[in-house]
Image (cartoon, rainbow, N blue to C red; front, side, top):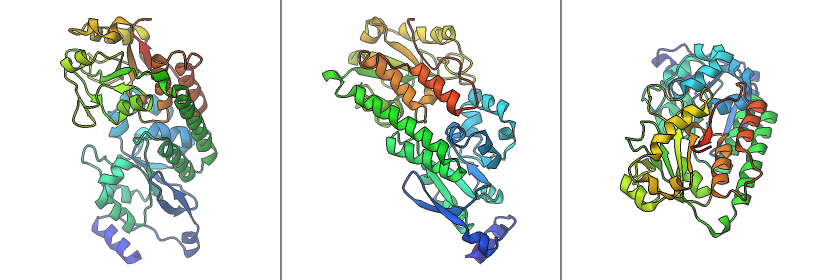
Length: 371
């Protein structure tokens, strides 16, 4: 096995990994990851490659955790969420100097680059794990363990397992357990309050508000906001109206379905001047200015949601994260106001920042069009 590792490293044009003394190699431990794999790794981890869920990683490992990161998939943070990325790099400048290993979404992931960084472990999201079969074999041959995390599944079990796995890898299990306990408590409280919905099944429509009201954005079925809708006992308009997990619903179909609640998913995207803007650097006036033209779409004035003032903006990046319970609280509070009367989603979001994140809470993350 050692000979094969050296051969593969040489074939890739890489320096052969230093061989540990027998005693050091014996000092290993195991971590159970989000998909139930038992992963053996060094007892002490000093070099980590992280491929996604950087804000979750920061919450669990703390700012100090980044001192152990030797590479990451930069585009998935700097490219997808630049406004948030710049906020973190202002506080942790070392992040922006880390080597970029590419990512599966853009087809430029480099297993050779990862191996050259000599990580003790790679923390990888499940959808990359499923796609990178060749890279996984290369890592195995090089003796590099992979710990899989999965917040995209949007299940309580995988959220908790992912959080605990990161904490175990980074030596911050106490912090991870505090986060896991918080998430479980809030998630189960939401389900308890929703219950049977009082026999109601409100109709909910979600749309990605990235290109402006003249363009119909994606809705979601069985995943992302679609999964949130069904978890909260609502009727999701995308069910049966789009063929895949996401895609636009025809304007006529939305009018015919007549949703009771509409949530436009915004963010601080770059080069998207017509988007509904939400996030750290956005004020309520800006968000409402972007949201208002959607209410004026042809035929929308007759929708129940518009007539009853139930048009909302929600930060798209809150989905499939350790913070998604705050978005669920907001949506559930609109759907079942009497059952969530004492719940304050904004306060939940602020508290999470104060306890677990280095960046200060600010801006607009979820907002009703009419004050």
